Image (tube, rainbow, N blue to C red; front, top):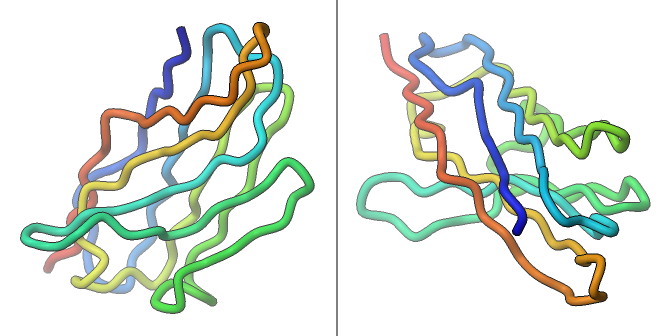
Length: 120
């Protein structure tokens, strides 16, 4: 069984910064990609940023230049540094991982979500 544990959400003023972390643990052979999605009230879940095993990254247009995704391979952890936060960034942020188990199964796992609120 694989778990993703997120941390780092909270309340921040517009223009402020937050750093989200997500650590993967359990029966993991390899991680193909890890990413962050978010879901605002009344809206669909959307991709924020993703990073692959080859360190390729992809960002939503709305966060380009403000958010940076990175990872620590040994710790199986992904980070999302969020700068210049705007009220429209308010959402529950979910960590996602696409990985291979020791039995060579490809699985997709989600974290429980962490709330980010941008408000004065």
